Image (tube, rainbow, N blue to C red; front, top):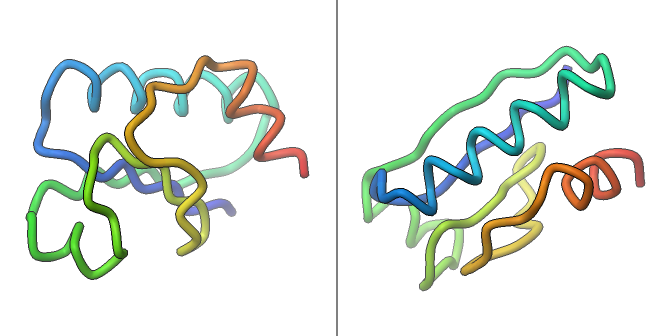
Length: 78
């Protein structure tokens, strides 16, 4: 099961990234846990200074971008 975390304060961009990530794992048929990390201190622990950020299994994949569903699927498949 993949653990996907969306780092951000809950802004519209963070929400869009969360929706796109959820759509990507559903389209790929993967089991996943989606967690939204909104605590700024927790976000900083990841070394992220700009949100939203996408973290998969503890590894920061992107920061400061709202990735499209297709791009997230590419990242998950690699």
